[in-house]
Amino acid sequence: DAMVIQNPRYQVTQFGKPVTLSCSQTLNHNVMYWYQQKSSQAPKLLFHYYDKDFNNEADTPDNFQSRRPNTSFCFLDIRSPGLGDAAMYLCATSRDQDKKQYFGPGTRLTVT
Amino acid sequence: KNEVEQSPQNLTAQEGEFITINCSYSVGISALHWLQQHPGGGIVSLFMLSSGKKKHGRLIATINIQEKHSSLHITASHPRDSAVYICAVPNSGGSNYKLTFGKGTLLTVNP
Image 1 (cartoon, each protein chain N blue to C red):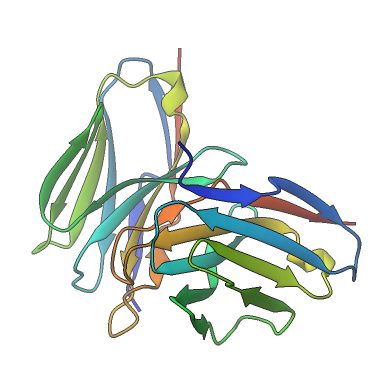
Image 2 (cartoon, each protein chain N blue to C red):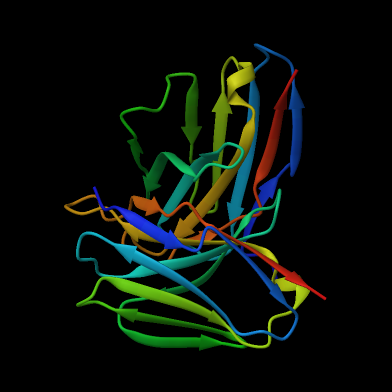
């Protein structure tokens, strides 16, 4: 059974048109992460939530926002996608900040 | 920041061969992750280990904390094992949730 679910798996959006990516988990983990992975590159951490506490990485553009309405769900909002935001977006969860991270299948975002 | 080096970068094997992928890191850690990513796909966490050895099916991961080195072994490799294998370690200092990823090893197993 899937433990970290991402929807949609593929998303196409237009330049400048806001888009929301969704992540849900059945593990009841405290921590949820969002990573951006561009082609042939390592994943880059955008931000993470520890419970309701939001932790933004210093180099994450303001264009990227996140919401965590409850333990199970976390959303990534891209307010005005640019061509450079086309990437795989990975959600991950862990029971605590130093524990094993469980990754979702990712959402591949295309910006036209 | 922890520096992570993986070798080899690319590895081609014949079905059935024993595979070894190596990972070295620069700063002492509490645990190390091995991840698998199929081309164009998401990431699967294979192991998180802090000492000794772990085994899951045909996959074996070992770590030597003193030498700052880990290996991932695949026994009786199969074409479906073809993927990128990534080693990741926590950053040093207080931000141990933040992982530093190796560049990955692209494994191709031919039938």
